[in-house]
Each structure stands twice: as C-alpha cells, then as structure tokens.
Image (cartoon, rainbow, N blue to C red):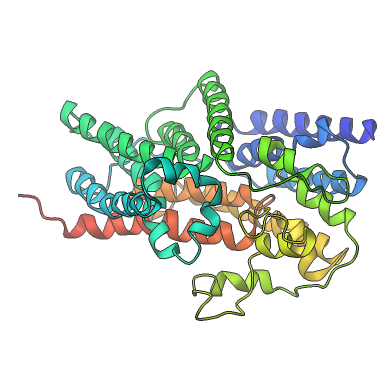
Length: 415
C-alpha cells in the first residue's frame, strides 16, 4: 500500500514538473485539474483506503497526464478591449443583483430573522427544496461580481467613484455569501479574480497564487465549520466501518475518496441505468408535478448506498466513477467514469486553445473569460462531483448571468 501511494505521489510531482516546463501559464487546464485532484483526493495519503480507490485515483492522474500532451499554449487578452460600454455593464450588474438580494432578505424574513436563519443553515438543502427558481437569483451574485471585477480592471476610464461602487457591490456579494453558508460562493469568486486578472491584465506571480490558495482553504474551513455548528444533521452512525461523518464534515480532502470507499465496501445494489444523467433534463421540474422524476447522482447514491443517512438534509457527491458505477455497475461503470472524465479534461484543453483565437472572445473578452473560468472549473470538478449538479450550476449560476449582463447592457440607456 505504501508503494502504491508513493507511486501516486511521484506521478503527481512528475505531472506538475512537466506541466510547468511545457506551459508557464499558472492557470492552464492541466494545472487546474492537478490542483483539484490533489486537494479533493489527498485524503488517500492520510488514511487507509481500499486498493480499488487507489486504482481509480491512478487513472485520474493518467487522464491528467494524457491532457499534458493535448494542452496547447494560449495567449491572453491583454491587448483586447472591454467589448461592452463599461458604464452600462456596471449598471446592468447592479440591476441584476437586486433580485438576488431581495430573495435572500425574503428567506431571512421567512426564517424569523437573521439568527434563526443562520441556525438553520445546516438544513438549507431541505429548506430550499422546490425553490430553485428563487435560489438561482442569489447564486448568480458571485458571477455578477466577477464580471463587474473584470470590467473594472479592463476599464480605461476607471476612476475612484467606479472603484467605490464596485467595492460596495463586493460587500453586498460577500455578505450574502457569508449568510448563505456555501464555501464555494465566496472562494471561487476570489479565485476567479486572480485567475481573470492573470489573463486580462498581467500574469500573477506564483507566490501570490499560493498565498491565495491557503487563504481559500482557510476560508472554506471556517465557513464549513461555522455552518456545521448550527444543526446536527449527522448523528453518530457509521457505514461499513467508514468514518464518513468526520471526513464529510471536517475536511474536503476526502471528498473524492468517500464515495469510492462506500461504493467498493457495499454489496451489489440495483443499477440505475443512466437515470441520474437524465435528471439533468428533469431536475428543474418540481417534484409535486413530476413525483417520479429521477434523482440526481448524489441523492440517489446517498439513498441507496447509505440508507439515506441524513434523511434528505444532506447528500454526498459521487464523482465521475462512482456515478457511472451506480448506473452501469462494476467494472463497466469504472470504465465509463474514467473515459467521460478524460473527455471532460481534453475538451477543457481544446477550449483553452481556442480562447485567444475565437472572434467572440476577442469581441467580448470579459464575458468570455468569466465563462471560460467557470467552464474549466466545471471540467475539473467532474472527477469528484455529480453530473447534473455541475451542469446545472454552470448553466444557471454562471452562463445565464453572463448572458443577462450582455443582454441588459445592450438595453440600458445612458443619459
């Protein structure tokens, strides 16, 4: 087991070295894939895991290694213009942010005040069930703020007043993020700022990237810890002698390994034959209209493989291999998961290569860069998240607000 883990570690170091030698871009797709795999699968090195889990992570690293030879070098947007009148864009962002703030205030009011609302953060999955059409509005705030930031740093007419208005929007966004209890709400936006700045203004030095990485890890830990103090949703039950609860609640470094450990420790269960993937098309339909709609991968996995341990209050993510396996069985699902994950990685490299050559990207660099940022993170997330969640998040929380800003910017009239 030690030899196997040492091999994984050597592979990781090798990929990191070759990636940096081949492409000095600190945010190239392979580097993003590698960082995500290191962070969300590093629990392999700190706990005892099954050989099957190690083998799955080995193939994940192989997929990243293959991507090394597909990933091209990419030019940046530093010579390109904003593409949209900056003042109309700023006004559009503010207009589109109002519904999200209003919905959040409505949720707080319905909960009985800010204290009661915070006390129920651990139950937000159940509390927000069937209200996705409302939740969507305040989950668009991170993307809106990132578009605002990108427009500001590329604005040739940037002045103190415009900076003050952006800071005000950032405070609004940050406040909503804190009371939402989502670690990614704030963390990904901060990452997006340094990511887009590196492409649109000047390349960011590694020391600043590393500093931000530690800040994001600390921030995610604090938000997660505070959130989980309000409401005990787990109890003390263990499944197949796997300490799922402590791993799930206290550390994200086991996110990738937990579902694999449960999968390989469980007896044979009924297969879902692709229904979790179909949930992408049906998930937006309220269950009172479509009671038998398919569950997403995480919900189905938690119900079937953990006996719905948290009673619907929380669910485990699956990851590409686990979700494919609960649909098509082992070993077919493992192969499907590995192949589809590799396809995601390779497509991310393709988009990266087209980034500076696309006419749309050249005309609208701010909107294109923000969408690309979220897309490459979506590709990286697929290895430890679920199919429906990553696509719905990308479409409704990331692409949609960008498109709304573009549409609104063409209709807002300047006086």
